[in-house]
Image (cartoon, rainbow, N blue to C red):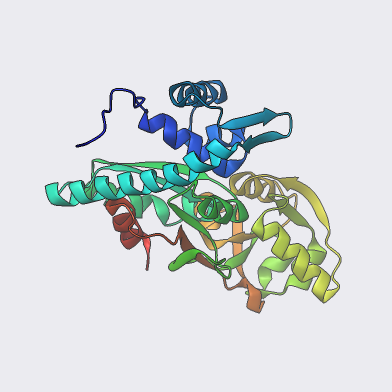
Length: 301
């Protein structure tokens, strides 16, 4: 004979998911950002969960949160429940033949101004019920978002995939030298890093993958960089070049998007490290939601 269930509290699945997110992040604020909910609302949901269970699950302090013994139990079991629910949803969708849901996509600027829009358009045409939640991030932030399961799919400059991530080729996007019309180096078809560095550079996205690469190569070659102005986006960099404030080393995709008119000269960067690929990344998990699998298939090359 089964035990009576009248005394079993009614647990809200969404509140349980938010609690698991907070436990993983170690922070209410970070969990709220990850789940796209106000921190106060997330905290209230967890308080409701604690009330339903009749025990505290978290110890809150200025340094963040810590799990109580009961909290550790709920986190471990709750994480398994969440995985089971995802599997249930996936199985039901596959039985119905529908492809729906939201895919969280993080991409760097090169992908967004390059080949991503057309591939997304083709995907949306094939699967109109799938929502793409796209965020632009720097390459290292894309990798971090995938590792933290804050993104289902990421696109970033190729790097050795960290443990726990799967990866696929997305696009080839070599670096080139962008010059204003009439620049002294415009007479050359191939320009070395030393030559363009000495002529004066426009800096782009301090701390980003491209900025780090340029500074690393300058240090290795013992080249002094002459940077006249620094901006945070490729379109702004192209505008600075157009105004004659320096040359810029940019991805081919950015030059095609923002510097396709007469005031610019585009030249090959004669360095082996100018070859540059973009890759897809996703947290290694099984099973993935069908919409995520289909988007990866649509984007990879």
